[in-house]
Image 1 (cartoon, chains in turn cyan, green):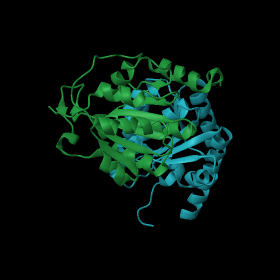
Image 2: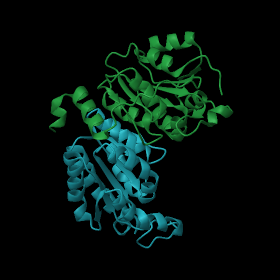
Image 3: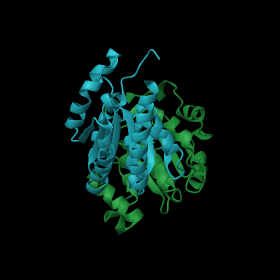
Length: 179
Length: 197
């Protein structure tokens, strides 16, 4: 079971990687999540992508604002709890200056979640993003992901929006603490 | 009350007098007024909010513009809120980034409450421990003169904590509309075509 989940993740992770690569996303900022593992590895293997491991997700908002000031696109990878760490920076930097931003968020705290400490922030994630006027689309199926990432990246960088793709826990699979 | 030799407006004028076309990012509050006190410059990105993120804006800019020098000028309170960014920046080690912290040991915009540096927290040691080898603390005119000669040309990531007294200069407010500051900066740095993408 575990292997088949990882194979799925590897496939759609490669789809996301291709969209990022084809659209010239250069700065890949992330706080790792198991759901982003394969995507991070694909990006690491592309020498034209600059990987920036963050100590906290909010650093990514400053980083990607600076990247755009210098003419580079980027993306912020995180899990849903990271949205909570980003709130003021999204509002007070990205929104205040109309910087473009794409966030790819793997969801916790919803589909068959084992860890109750993940549920409150997971359930609040979409409401928090809505309060910040982030354009959000949710992917529940693998075949939706590539188009969604492409469209949200376009919205961000063509129209100065803040956009987010939520990769649902149903899609990724609930984290197992027993394997 | 602290009695350091250096005054913040003297420091900013020394620090940026040889900036040429170097790119300058300030932290919110006092260092924003300090940068503005030297006159407007289209290659200043005036940060008015997002406390704790000034150095990260500097990192993103440094990575995207490796042939330009980026100088981040921020305060001790702003830096303290983003200490994690020192670790992140140290890992990337951009040679074209200089971080300078004006340390008056106070939250100057909110009633002069003491910051952690007033109790001995040494930001330059934290930067050094993070892996920024060129990290130092200075508090004399002589050391400032050396810094102002070095900072606009050295090809190495650096962190400098400058102890300043709490004399305030005149509050000089720069433009504050974020989208305009951003687009003006991009047009000046990248050319008009950057706005047509």
